Image 1 (cartoon, helix red, strand yellow):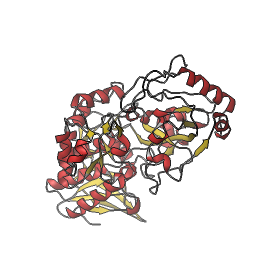
Image 2 (spheres, one colour):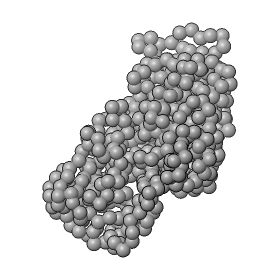
Image 3 (cartoon, one colour):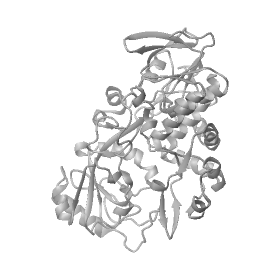
Length: 492
């Protein structure tokens, strides 16, 4: 492939961050070329596998209507959308990362979130309220909780379909099945990329390069090296193509690593899910209604506070906890009082589920679990529930337990009304937190002296320093959008 005299901005990857970078560069008048390692039918990186939730600041329903003009008066009347202020977003980011998030990156992420949503809407991307997963109907009115209100129309697949159509309409070229293997670096600046397509290897000259090729979650060896022993046993929730190529090629020319290299986003995932994500199932192997039940391990014991916080603020770290249990698995247990609250992902055909009319019967069906210890654990748990505190799924209701080795803080319902349902979960890794150091003002990659590398930018999962230990739900797509737009704008 020969380059034109007016060299393109080359975007490596074709997920949400990549498309945002491409649209921003195109907006500045640059020629843009997206190089995607995956074939077209598997393209889109982890973005295609997400449910599409995106976290942003909004100060009321008017802000939401600006990005969701399809919102009807009837929907507004029957919904309490609340607000999610800058202060709340900052508080959540610092709290869940144990105050480790880089302040400058966090300021950019939070401060640009609403404007970036408006920008994406202006480009033609559509959003909708997350009624199915983030709002419960109480006294005839839906109430949103956990600071997460908006999703891309059509979820992850819809997001990539929209992005692709918009990009092509704007004259952005997309080359699928084209793996970038190295950066062309003259000792001062990045001037292009080396690619492999089929049996052919060749160079492409570039005005600048934006790396948006994801983390290293699909690289078994890197997971074990950086996250630790046992991580080779985790399932990958998303694409099989995120093997750390972008990070490696940047480090090869002296880029600075940054962030929580031993940390990752990992969730409870169906125990019998395949090694990598399956687009026919998408995000539905996840099992995120655990706050309304309990989780037990192979010894029959609870091991974590299922109601420590809203699901949005615990799900991304509990995958690691499950991986550390005997047999790298757990069972989620629910009784009929709460089964109507279970998310749609519990009702798919490909699910590891058992049911029973009594606890004793259920105990015999939980594969790998000590049945006697399980029955004893249920009795002890039921006796510890604060039954006088009302249950309310929309707030942290303080209906907890007392006197247990691991108490449950909120949403503690007894497990005594059959029929009972149980779901076996393992660990599903979403993305890794370690990556490249960037300038938060431009998205430009910094070298080990913390000096900008001319011609090289980065966005998305491979940016280090934003997430540590944990993650507020919906922030990954927001990060990709904000920093993708920033990088593309400056790369052009």
